[in-house]
Length: 512
Image 1 (tube, rainbow, N blue to C red):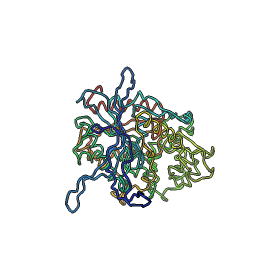
Image 2 (image 1 turned 90 degrees about the vertical axis):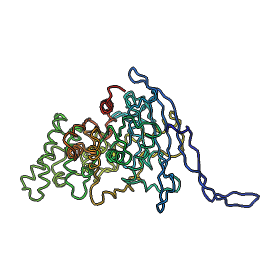
Image 3 (image 1 turned 60 degrees about the horizontal axis):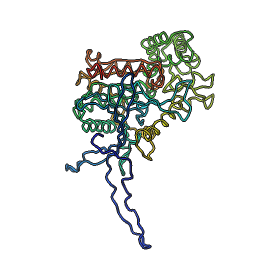
Image 4 (image 1 turned 180 degrees about the horizontal axis):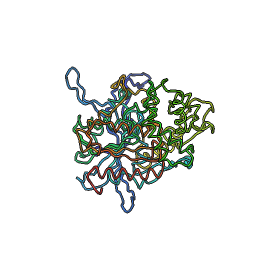
């Protein structure tokens, strides 16, 4: 943070009830843990971007999050509740320049921000390779000449229990593992950074990926209503705003319909559509998903034998699965089963995060794969790159493990605000757009994304409860890649251009 003295991590607290020994006697000494304080380091860097040389300041570490405490109506002060990790990049510029600033985070829930940070937006990026050309260990780092820092300052946020973010001593991590608490804690960190860095008059953006898009949509409304902090834009990468589009439970036929064009794209990538172009395949799948497929699912046993046979044939042709499998699945193919079945004859599983990736099945007759091959392919490079980068280049040292993905946070995550109904933040996004008609929204879709299907995300946005004129504030970008489309080099380069262009236009600026 700009008003904090750069420090390095130290042990700041001693346990209560510590013991000391004096002249052969043991004495119990009660101590009070030292109050937590911001623990950040600041470094200076340069980066060549085209003909420009970016000179910027990086600040990384942990910032104490405090909450106002009232007991029986009596104000008890601001008590430290958590220490949240962040990394910011601020371009060296004259005071008052008020460049745009983008607050970025990933999803999970339970994911750190390392993926957007080192994969797409930051000034350095991981050398991970791609399908068929994966970089072997120990991996590496590269300059990111396409970094969004060229047009916007950047703040990467790790929610509690991810990255280096933890509750304070005696705190309960579970208190932050939920929809509402997550929105409030991330929102408070954004408010703090904006205030301490005097950026209230800067154009402000949120960039979220996957569940991070769920968070971003709700945060836009929260920041406006709670703090009067209005945004210029949202960047929703691999969007999921209504979980009914991805939830196959409870006889939910909508998810089967929304996933169908993704299945067709994946089948095309793996050679199941002959010489047809991807665009032709997607058009056929989208037409079927828009009309005949929902009707067939709604008919149930009322389908005649001839009608059922026709839909089995059409669905099998689009998905690349056998007619026998589609028939036995009752025209309803769940996504992980699809990823397991598509290339079963080759004893290969298809990736969920990125269906361009494949990996060997542990068992050839397994109902579902034992792991996502696409996650297996990318998690190692990101872990190695980050742990080297933060210590060797950003100068922050900590013995805490940097938690890429917190399985505990994911498993404990509470959606109690949506009890007995799907998680759906479209009312929050619609409310934010109605209150702030200047709010622009960019949505990035990956055709081979098996986690957040593009067709379902499109459908959700088309049904936003906003005036027709506000739909002009929403733009869509499509890439022939997966959930993290930036793993695919041509997609990464194009997406970087698309996001930079969006930030400039939504900021009302033609140049940085």
